[in-house]
Each structure stands twice: as C-alpha cells, then as structure tokens.
Amino acid sequence: PLQMCALAVAQSVFYAANKVFLVFGYFGAEDVGGTMTIHMFGAFFGLAAAYALGPQNKPSASNNAASKVSDVFAFVGTTLLWVYWPSFVGATETASDRNEMLCLTNTIMALIGSTGATFYLSQELNKGKFDAVHIQNSTLAGGVAIGSTARLAMGPGTALIVGMVAGAISVLGYFYGSPFLEKKLGLYDTCGVANLHGLPSVLGGLLSVVMVYVYQPDAAEDILQHEVGTQSVMQLAAVVGTLVVAIGSGYISGTVVLANPLTFRDVPDYEDAVWWEMES
Image (cartoon, rainbow, N blue to C red; front, side):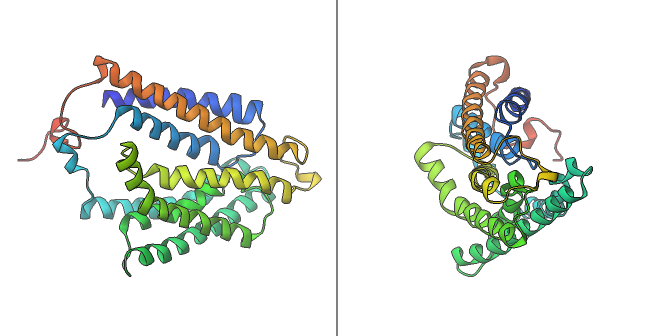
C-alpha cells in the first residue's frame, strides 16, 4: 500500500504539471475530455512504472485472476461509467449550450460505436462467445478516444466511426497486445490500461491533429487557441510531449519506489490476508 501511495502522489504531481504547463499552457492543445491529459498520461505513466517494478515472479501472482464476484462488480462499474461518461466530458462546458450539446452527442455516439465493435469483435475472436474483459473495458474505449475532439461539430457519423475504431483497437489490444507485453517485455498490465486508456487515447490524440483542421469551429464559437494548421501541429506536439513526460516520470517513479526500502516489503502479492483481517 505504501508503494501505491508513493506512486499516486508522484503521478498526481507530474499529471498536473503536464496538463497545466505543457498541454494547455505551452502547446494550447484542444483536449476537453482529457484524452491526452488524463487517459494518455495515466496509462503510460502506469505502464512505465509497471515496467520499472518488473514482472510478477512470486507464486502468489496466481491469485491475480478474475472471479464471478469480481466480474459482476466490474460489469456494474462499466455500466455506471458508460452512463456518466458523456457528462464527464461535457462537465466544463455548461456555460455554452452548443459546446455542451456537442460534447454529449459526440461522446454518446462514440460509446455506441465502441460498444457495437466490442461485442462483434469479441465473439469473432473467441469462437462465438463474449470475453468478459472485453465487454467490461473496450465498450468504453470510444469515450476515451473522443475526448480531444468532443467540442468539434464533426457530426454523429464521424463520432460513431471514431468509437468503432477505438473499440476494435481496444479488443485487439487485449487479445494480442497484453500477451505480447508479458512475454516479450515482462510488462504485466494487470488491469489492461494499455488497451482501454493507452491505445484509444493515442488514437484520439492523433485524430485530433486532423479533426481540428477539418472541423473548424465557427468564429462565434472559437474554442481553439491557434490558427488553422498551427493548431494541428500543437495537437501532435501535445501527444508526443505527454507520452515523453508520462513514460519518463512513470519509469523514474517506479524505479525510486522499488529501490527505496521504506516502501518495499517482501510479502505475497494479490493476497488480501496480508493487509486485511479475513474470516477463517
């Protein structure tokens, strides 16, 4: 727990610095829904920290598996996130009816797209059966990807397509990407943040490079910080900058936590009885 607290504090500091000084401050990027500042930074910070902490070699790592109870709770969480995600994206836009409407509409359509793509691709890859991990996570990928462009008048069709692509990438990440990371890099992504938050956020960030040019706001609703063309460059710079800061700070934080004896105890992992009073 102390390791987790140390990483949480470090991540909060670097997250705030990246968001305030780099993405919104220096680059002036468009990212109303936190595709870059929240999802991209959080995912790649965590992945870099996990890589620094190393693979799980203890026998207790076998406890890191889903159960019927955990799956049901995860499904409940997915439902709540799906329902409230549009209001999260549009939370800062209540002063503008137009921007708020665009955020809600685009996010809902993107979530519908990712949900449809997830259900279709999951059963295609699993011989006609749905994988609970895909449904719990990849159905939300559209909300992650649309965050950077939710205020743009792209139309419901475009938002739907963004969500479909995000959902497909997320499912493919769980099916192919996670095993690759574990076997080739020794990177154990316990909750699959690379597939729900990492890959869809990179997709959304890169799509924003094009969309801020194609779907330019009206002069009366000018939400961009730069002229046409320059804004696209700044969107790309924000993506690259966020990845560099997240990976660098995450790896350093993980290394420091692992090397510090004050935050490290050699106890079984994924074992509740180590930290909690359990019924016999």
